[in-house]
Amino acid sequence: QVQLVESGGGLVQAGGSLRLSCAVSGRSFAIFNMGWFRQAPGKEREFVTAIDWSSSYTYYSDPVKGRVTISRDNAKNTGYLQLNSLKAEDTAVYYCAAAPADQALGVRNEDYPYWGQGTQVTVSS
Image (cartoon, rainbow, N blue to C red):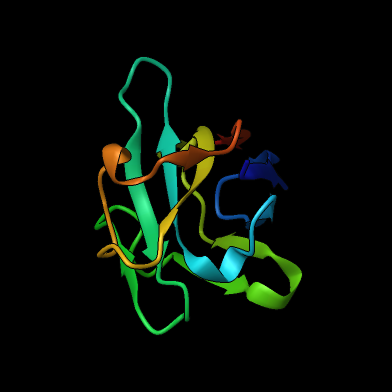
């Protein structure tokens, strides 16, 4: 059973930064690609960024490109999402997700079978 637990969310002023973490247990993190998604109130969950198992490939959605960095430490079974220059429209619940590394790096919700419970990020303007 794979479990993902996000942490690091909170309330931050516009222009500020946050670093989210995703701790993975139950299986070796190194056999999974990782993605981050977010869901704002009243909206569908949307793709933010993804990284392959070896950190060789990353992909970012246009709304966050240049402001967000995804990374991972397989030895610590942990993934990270660095959020910079935060805007009010970044307010959402942020979810990490994992998918088998033998699949192509996905950008859809259905590409990821394993999900965390989410962590709230609120940006005040």
